[in-house]
Amino acid sequence: MSGILFIISAPSGSGKSTLVAGLRGYVKDLEFSVSYTTRSPRGSEEDGREYHFTTRQEFERMISADGFLEFAEVFGNYYGTARSVLVEAARRGNDILLDIDVQGERQVKQKMPDAVSIFVLPPSRTELESRLRKRSISENVKPEVILRRLDEARREIEKYPNYDYILVNDHLELSLDTLVAIVLGERARRSGQPLAPDQKQYLEAAEKCLKSRMELEIKGILESFNSAPRA
Ligand code: ADP
Ligand code: 5GP
Image (cartoon, rainbow, N blue to C red):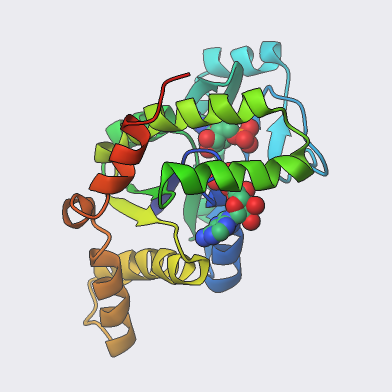
């Protein structure tokens, strides 16, 4: 694997899909891994575009054949990243972005410590709830699902210390700029070349989101989840 492996995770409703869609428009030579899943397609999702939709039997066959870099069970369904995705991206000389959950991140980081992991946080539990409720109108999901996602969010957020960067998705445009800065900053840092002025700016913006620098800023966000009643 020669390219950089980026991992992005977030509690459902934090804005990860919105940010990743924005990133696609800004950064070249970055491939987006299409995972395998046993869940059914939703809405306008197409096989091979959002996911490779597969059966439990076929997924378990791939596990036995050691076909996955990582896999996990999330909300009762299997999700996994095929090893072949990384091989293909490296062959094309591209970096790759995995949108995976907190269990997958652990597995990848253990195998590939050079991977760059980014955890997206909502600005507060109240804001996450409001985003989930807003989205639920188009998603047609029940109020119980929102409560379950909020409870799951609390558990996922506890895993933030495993990540390299913490991105608080408050103002969308600023968050997207920061995500772009993390990707371009890491590329610049690892290139081994002297840094151009714009590359220095990316690195500076990215460094502000290093986990070690974010502990104080996210204290209130963590408290907003921990002080909420548990489902
Ligand atoms: P995720 O992929 O993390 O589940 P989405 O990208 O679907 O989340 O975003 C959840 C909802 O929040 C969507 O309605 C989206 O338009 C909205 N959203 C995303 N980012 C922001 C933001 N920074 N401020 C306000 N609303 C946002
Ligand atoms: P959704 O069903 O809403 O698309 O995704 C549910 C969760 O599964 C999200 O947290 C998403 O990041 C995670 N996920 C998607 N693909 C993978 C994967 O290949 N591996 C792992 N571990 N998680 C995944």
